[in-house]
Image (tube, rainbow, N blue to C red; front, side):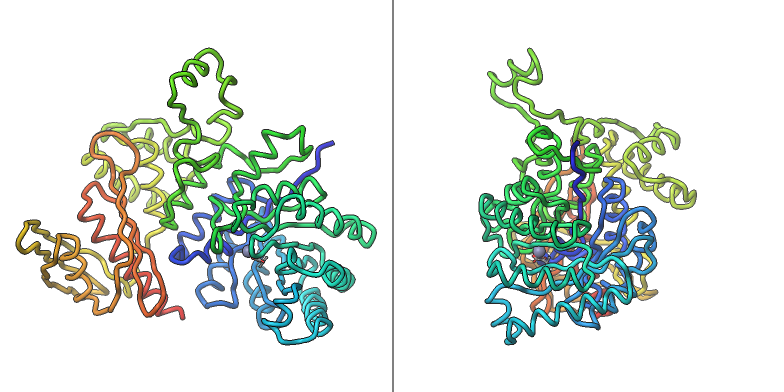
Length: 510
Ligand code: KIV
Ligand code: ZN
């Protein structure tokens, strides 16, 4: 019989550690709801000891989606971190404390400057303390793939005896190769099953050598029962193993792995789009499973073969990952019912009538501007509506703007509102966007530096929506801003303000 593999998603913790991928509370909640629709088994919602904002986000996620998904959050092996995790996740139905502590020589000697025995004891004490709070405790042996095997095993044995219910073996720096990592998992699994067959063995692979998916699959083949993954492979440096790749490999090659997951693969594309949209991090076009070209066939030979039989060149169908659902066209005359139907078909709820009316008004404005509204547009409209908080009086709103583009003095005039106050000003620049950003910078009085500006068109049809992603630096930290509009100059102004508001929110929560 096929083994069930537990899918632990860490997009909101390891994924969110990517510079500039910081998400606000509503964005995190929207992603958590989507992860629930995707049917992941465990959501790692954040690192609550890191900031008050992270604590609040984990708490809200536990409250809103913790009825059917296991919720966890990360703690270092110290009481303060463990308390923060416990306090933030205790509202969930099935909370899990996740503790991490290094086991490699380099971590023990350089990070902790303590003896190996002392570090091991720290881990044991942390697990014992966590067990006084909750029954489910995961222990991660950070940098396991570069650790001395016997010390790694001694640590695992000790923390299992102290009560750990899951052992996670991370390839923290992406150093492992599939044959070696598979063998490491096989050895650990053999001993662990003798020690306590109920303890779950898990893996967490990073992609520094482009091997995260291969290493995760090698681990599954050798006994791992749980995989830690992220949407779009987001994560520290080159990222983590990508959920969509590992899950589809297990599904398409089921007979080779003899494993299954609970993932609803038809939600994969939508989840990928949502995460990419909210983090502002694009998915490369040739990315396996969810890249724009993943199911596109351009050569004549391939097209001819496909027309004869899809299986000639397709190992899975676009429908399997939810690619076919993005195909409806609405207009301003479609009416409430059709719009509601489209929103619900994309998996969003429409129960709150006032919220739906506000959304419908935005749809009509968009349909007037754009004439043909595609499923992609509806998807971005809803996610933007649900993840932007215009009511916060600490934040700036764009009231109006005018930009004059010429080859002498490109000029911008901007009016902003913030908490009942109005700010007006003008600036010139080398180009219209520079003039616009310079006017906004002067009005908000923050010394932010534009590091990156990206514009692309979303969906298809005439008057496609333009999406602008920017990255700005403020006091050494990177913040992202994003916005969409059929007017790309307006989208540029809104994206910059979105970035400025992210700085302001950070200043409030730090
Ligand atoms: O990469 C890593 O080691 C981690 C641990 C917290 C599991 O992210
Ligand atoms: Zn990691």
